Image 1 (tube, one colour):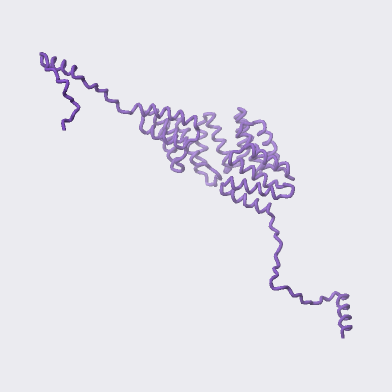
Image 2 (tube, rainbow, N blue to C red):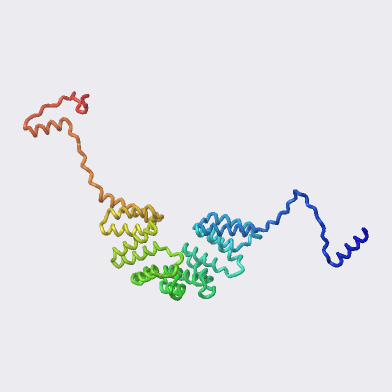
Length: 348
């Protein structure tokens, strides 16, 4: 019987027939699945979540962890967004280093990292380096997001170099056909008109932005109303300027430059109390210490202008002075006061 069983088993194996066998596992044994979650990817996603919330410190920690866990520290995407987080904190030296690392590791063109570098260089007035990065970004396919942003930044480079007409051409290319939706390029285009004192053209552009039926992503509406007010003020429309500035403040009371403009306008119109109020609000919200110092100087001068005049100091006459005054009033010698009498004693 045992031989027959052995023969049948051999035949089954040779024919590929599976043989069911029962394996007994101890009761306390635990079968644990392998941990397949990549810590590099996990920390990258955590960093992206922090970045969306505007928590730059949390994002930086997570992206650094992502790079740490990456094999051979190869993590171009983590390096790119690490640069974005450093840029948000204005730690530009670290941002440049991280962006360059992302470009170095990238197997593609890394247009977004070139754009990031261009923005940082422009902020630090490193114009030639910004121009080189714009040239890299503009090599992206025509009218793609990276391409048009490269042209917009190139316009800012031309502005920094004092070539407004070249800048205008770059902004117009970035804007493309109407209706326009590229917010940064449109704002730069309108502000370029302001710098050239083309107030009518700028007013028209800001009006079109306000009436736009398309979503203008990232539009800073308080700043838009600030600019529109500046244009109207330049044309002499003080009421129109004030109306638009108040619209801006209704959206953001901490818009320091609007408070400053209102203060200066009220100051020029001799509305001293209103000017004082706006200068104080400017000093409260502004981070520009040079402007704040000047505003405080003007504020002090205005407060002195409206301060009530101080009453003249009254000198208390001495007993001898009182005696002489009495003589003059009576026409004869006054009785001398007893020096032993203390006129400050209430007599209790």
